[in-house]
Length: 310
Image (cartoon, rainbow, N blue to C red; front, side, top):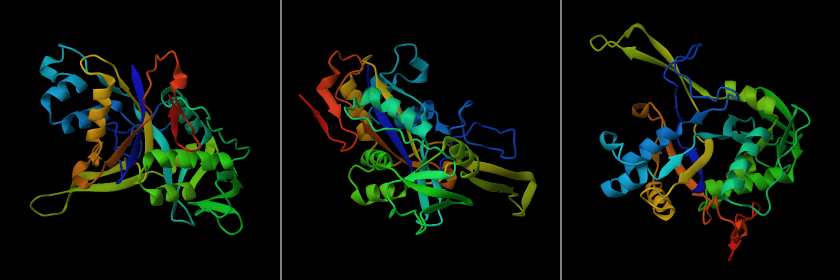
């Protein structure tokens, strides 16, 4: 089995829902039970990519037979859930910030170490207070002149952290490999907050839309036809894993097929008719099997994004 990291960049609000909510929001986004982190189910991602694959033979080998013949063999590709990596949050300066936390980075690092085999893994920023946030430097796009950062109505002291810069540049190389302007924007707006603060933002920084249904004849609101939908904001970044198991297609064919399908934006999640879920996908890593007895043959430096090896 060979694995690669997968990064998802939401170009419009993303609604990966659970069907029905029990609280004030009628249609909330899917969240992990223990952590509260939003995620996009791997089954949703696999279904969209399967539909995008127009070559019937390749689709069968990579994604498995159609449902009527599903007993024949399994597919050669598996997707993990795509979990939140960076949450865009409104900022008093710089319009918005890409916010993450030590716990989220630690989970990303665990995935990266299993797929990219880094020689020089970045350190996880350590936040000693909920009143602090870690940024790349004093002149970044979200830091005020008095070294404060303000998100929504939350006020933080900006702490300079080289590890934050390493993480921002590493993530930027994978989300925007061919666009230096967007990489610079991500680095300038990258911020690490305390896990407790992140938990609060996960509940308050998502988008909630009020929706109504109109009567066809009178164009007035039908009775009991008002509901609320939650979505992850545009510019949200998720990450996860994709695995290739040589059932009918080898890892090379699997990943080459996926690369071809990821060349243009895809619609993921629900509410496509109102513009939700337009996303870009990028893969990173590769060149080595999870079972390779000599993992040193392919190493990747977090600080530069360059791969070295035999």
